Length: 66
Image (cartoon, rainbow, N blue to C red; front, side, top):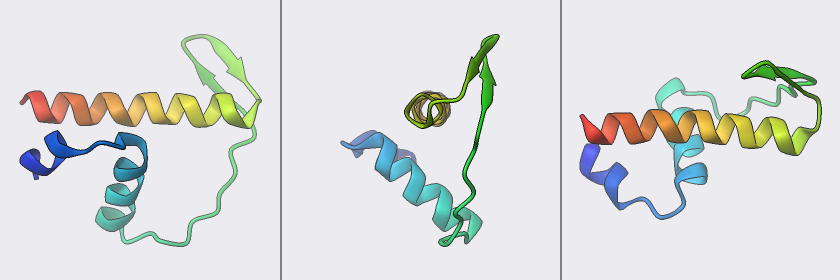
């Protein structure tokens, strides 16, 4: 799995696909209306999406380093 992670070009898309496979959740349509990140209140869907992308990308980076 670690070698596969290192070869990913589109980390955001691949991360989401991997999480869906691991959780067997292919049809989730939950929409987050607001989110607190680093004491910032996010309501814009793009900002919320970017926050999730950053978070999950950092997890993948940590996994690949270990």
